[in-house]
Amino acid sequence: MRIGARKHYITIYTPTQTTDGQGGYVTKWTTSTNEWASYKEIGQERELLYSGIHYFTAAEFEIRRNTNVWAGCKIEYDNYTWVIYEVISDDKKTRIKAYR
Image (cartoon, rainbow, N blue to C red; front, side, top):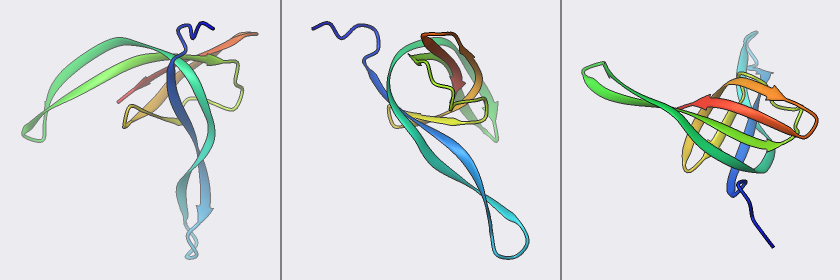
């Protein structure tokens, strides 16, 4: 059996707004799905922020077709939280671009 390119296990979280009991709302992150994905780093940047050097990494994840993911959701992968900024789907797969 061949594993193929989708050998990275990710968790996708979707935002859910719930009332805070005082007339406002709080965003909670709900587990949407766990998927096997391919991973490809597409860029890295370094900035000096708040008197320290911060690294930003952008990556592309590819999963089976999933319509329950959109820009603004989050991915947990390799002990990092990634913010999704672009989702492209076709009949067989979904490509997700995210940064951390």
